[in-house]
Image (cartoon, rainbow, N blue to C red; front, side, top):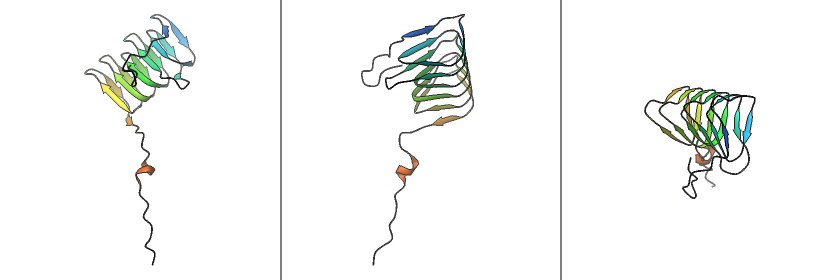
Length: 134
C-alpha cells in the first residue's frame, strides 16, 4: 500500500461501498477500495502505481491483477500482485497467488498455489559455455 519511491501510501481514488454488488469486469487506475461484492475480474491499467484494498466485507469472484494488493476479505479466483501483496488476518483466498513480495498475517488462508515471480528470468541466469578454439 506504500509507494516504494516516496514511502507514502498510494491514494484511494475510488470506493465500492458495503452492500454494493458489481457484476462485470473492473479496470481502474490509482487506488480502489472494495467493501462490497464484485462478480468479475479486477485489473489495474496504465503505467502509474495501482493499489487495491479489499476490506473484511469484500467478496470478489474473479481474477485480480494489480501492482499492490491488500486483502482482508474473500477472493474466489487467482490473484496476480505485480509487486506486493498483503494478506490480512481475515483474508480468505481460493485460487493461486502470484507475487514478488508477500506479507501474510496470522489467520490468513490461501487455498491454492503460492507462486513467487522474480524480476530475473531463468534464461538470464544461464551462462553459455563456448567450445575451446584450437
